[in-house]
Image (cartoon, rainbow, N blue to C red; front, top):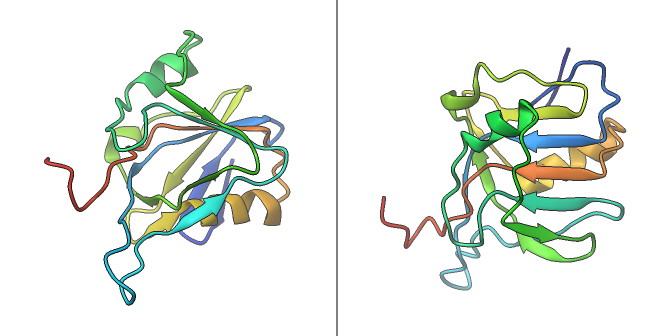
Amino acid sequence: MERKFKKLIISSVNFTAKKALILSHGGYTPSQSKFRKGSGLVAIPHGLTMEFNSMRNEPSIGTKANHLLNGFDIQPQDTVLFGAFINNYSLTHNPLFDRYKPNEQYDLIRIDTVGKSHMTDVFEAIKTLDLGYTDIRSFACRINKLTYDF
């Protein structure tokens, strides 16, 4: 089953999972001047815990999501609780995750092949679609897009 919200594609077995995985490319743009404010920050909504597969300013090894979906214990690299601020990461499609399937425990949040989304869109989708997630695990990179050396 799939639901769409803006550029987000949310896949689920039955939309009763309390956890979801963000499967995309990601990064943030820092403020550069008064007129180029960058990605900005966003507060994690009440009742939600964000887990990241990488530390801030670091790339993520996205294939670990497949291990998690197959029952392996993959520990998050960083955990941020509700009320805390994180970068409003931009999220774009990553074809690596196209064949991944949700399971009873995890819904999947991916990005359409055209355009991009942001963490604010993810939080808005959770509220608008009444998805009831308590935990989101992001497998997107958390890099500074201006300084990261690809």
